[in-house]
Length: 163
Image (cartoon, rainbow, N blue to C red; front, side, top):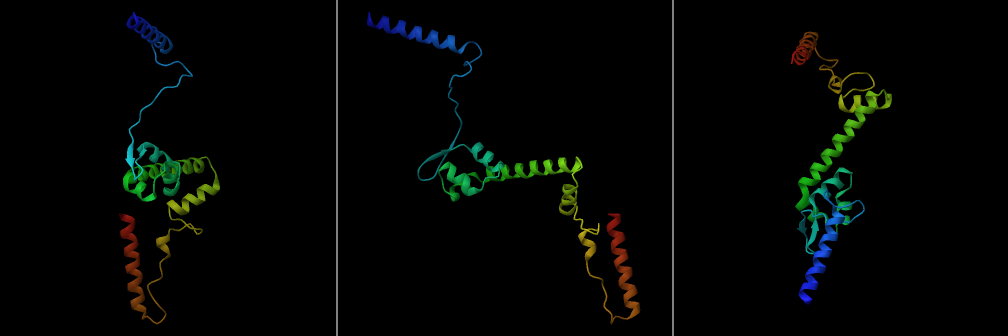
């Protein structure tokens, strides 16, 4: 008799659970358990989800900040999650570049100047940095040597332009 009563109670609980979940899954507001694969790290055997490390690196957190948040050492973080750190920081730089270019293309002059200097090697004179090299002669050089040096520089510049 007790076994039948327990079976009936279990069946009733199961029916109630199914009615709450419905056909599409848990109802809004219900707590569900989500399982993520984690890597166990350090002496204290701390479980760390690699995607969390990558996400924090993408937000711009330092190694020290990430390690303290996760409860592991900097060394353990870099040793076990170096790829995730690199990937996250790569995504951060990429998204920042995209945002900078978007702002510049919207016409913000300060960003246009900054990108020109940093990505295109432009300076205030409008010339690239490679054109700021010193001239190839001194005052005490013979005149024919100066002409040869000038022709060499002109030839180098023409070769670079044709490439």
